[in-house]
Image 1 (cartoon, rainbow over the protein chains, first blue to last red):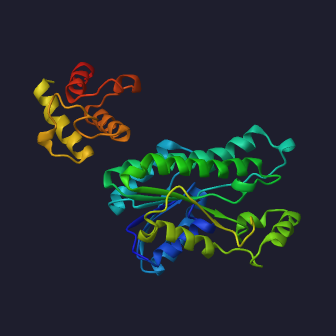
Image 2: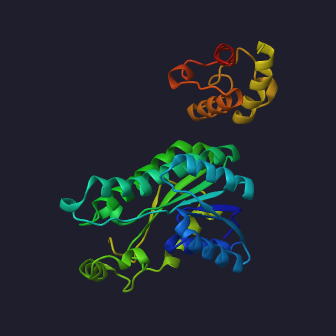
Image 3: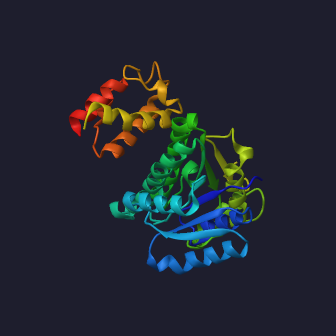
Amino acid sequence: MAVTKSVLITGASRGIGQQIAVQFAKQGAFIAINYPFESEKENAMQTLHEVQNRGSQGQIYEADVSNLAAVEDMVKKVKMDAGSIDVLVANAGITKDKLIMRMTSEDWNQVLQINLTGAFHCTKAVTKEMMQAKKGRIVYISSVIGMIGNAGQANYAASKGGMIALCKSVAKEFGSRNITANCVAPGYILTEMTQNLPKEATDQFMSRVSIKRFGTMEDIAHAVLFLSSDQAAYITGQVLVVDGGLTL
Amino acid sequence: MTREEVLQKVIPVISDKLGIDEDQVVGDAHFINDLGADSLGLVDITMALEEEFGLEIPDEDAGKLETVNSMIDYIIKAA
């Protein structure tokens, strides 16, 4: 796959975001590693070390994606450090799982604000730069939950479904500027996030996965790298489901 | 700011955003019909000029600025 020049990955201090950074680093890209707040800085540094160990350059950037001003500030800094932003991977996300009967407006808003509004903020900030360059790649990390829903995850499902609709709109709005936007929708992936799911849910998911294993973070990262590559230039507004057959 | 001063600042912005030669950016040129702008291009130009002149052009005004001249008139009035 072609070398990508500069990649901004939100929520890259841990989990899937970190793994995406590591896989991009193998291509020799500049990796902008976003993390949300001070207490994640050490993890972000760890991601940076992993990137540097693979011979790539990078930098860490603190910004809460739910804050537009902070995101715009971060994008400016990345532009200064890397010279351009060729790829945005909108990955930052949280869960606050509860049954709707127990879910507060705060639980709902917080998840929507970070997962969906955060993706909008990042899109708004980077497209300005990408329009100027007349090229760009945006990959949203959605979820199969955004397509099929899940009991106990109404807020998360709504945010991830919203990302798909956002992605399709971005694809239409910026297609004429050679900017593509696609989603990767992970299924059941082994991460810290899925460790917190109740065993009942885990067992139920597993029984439906065709490829009889849970997905790995590498599985997701490879899909992201493909959608960011020159080979995917004519693919836009799509959802690439990486779930081992879970949603079939 | 004189009309000429505004014009000299506006021309490179429009030329850059639309990817056209500077000498195509003449006063009576229509952004869409003559310069080939689309809606996204117009927004891009408007935002760049807002930044250049440190002013805010509300959407309801921006929608009426269809030619280079009308844009310059607006900037002179607002700046």
